Length: 483
Image (cartoon, rainbow, N blue to C red):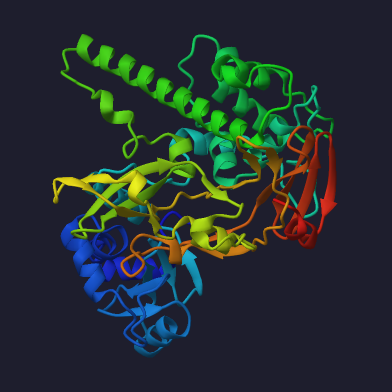
């Protein structure tokens, strides 16, 4: 791939320079400040049909916005313009080449704009693809012999030994290993460990597991070191009894997050020490790792923002709070507040989750406007979505009378649009469509059972992971599973 795009883009840059790209990317793709966001909300809609949905393109030769497909291509063809900017992801498109193109200098300008956007919104910088440094490029060129993954190959698939009721761990590890963004991170050796002993670092162990999965070996792996590290850092999971896969998933993300933050803190501390030794003044804030500013790989991939609106029934005043989440837990049982109806699909579960709930007289809140306790309604919505959305179906029900497992079938799709559940549906720019790539299943009762997982190995290729046994699976099997 060329570092300077195609010849058509090189001709465009000679004639127009990079200024047009920088301005359009700053205002309509990255939205670096409030003024940019206002301009995008007003002007950024298709000149042909008026749509402001996902994957709009901006012509870099003139002032024109068009939808993906016929509207933007007809304009480029009629005006003999070659270069357009896709606004959801900030990628360049060449009509003459009929393909997306890469230009190193344009990506540098785009990264600057993304950093300005993150600073203005006080959020972490979104996930960025790995771009090799000059040293890494030379290493790749010097070691040209590399493994090529072809369709129908089993590389990346490894069975996992059951160490005694550890199926809950095996299925979560399979799902994490087949998370594309996470595998990109670990397979490019991005973790810089600050621990004195890598044997005590969970991130180092997970990095080793990715190397093992993609080594080409077919023998089952033993996760005894990973299990021991989890026991040390998440004491509530220590022991030989069967554990909950969801609890293990959250605990693993938490420990990975803490280790990544610790490694970054130690690295910055060493850097600050060296700077102070050379007479350079530097300071760091302890709040730099709080949500919204943490830039570790776990937060970049799995962290979203939940919005909670509490409305006073007397004055209609709204109190809004925001909370980060790693997964969305969805109730499956009957509830009186929703007419005693049980959900049948994932959409039903999310509609129930985001529906306004009357809190009643027993749960009055003190309204800041009324200065007194009033009845209210509470409603959840999704402020921002992570790159990977994890849904937890709450099948294990615990009450004073009985503990039981809810085994009702919940239908879920392969492709899912989350736009209806966003806090700002009209002003929400971006692509909120997600593709299914992993399903964790539990077979049995609340007291005893077994976990398995379905994972997407390659495009249109699914496998079933049952501890050390890996078998091919059809999409129908995946969609018919309990979830």
